[in-house]
Image (cartoon, rainbow, N blue to C red):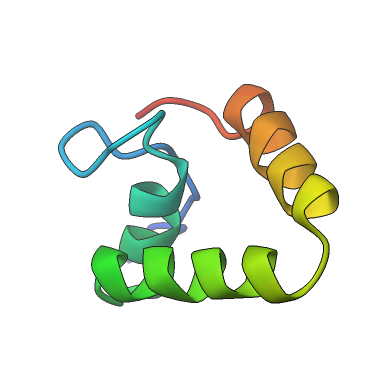
Length: 65
C-alpha cells in the first residue's frame, strides 16, 4: 500500500490571519500557539521586515486545503 504524502497547506480551522502558521503547526504536529509565540519572538529579536515579508509571501505560496 502506498504511503500518503504529507503536504503543507493552510489551516481552515486554526487561523488568525491566513492559516499559514496553523498549517505549519499541523504539518509539524506541534501546538500552533507555541509556534506563533516562537515566530513573534524570532521576528521581534531579529529583523522585523524579513519575517513579515516571508509570512506575506507564504500567504500566496502555501496552498489552501
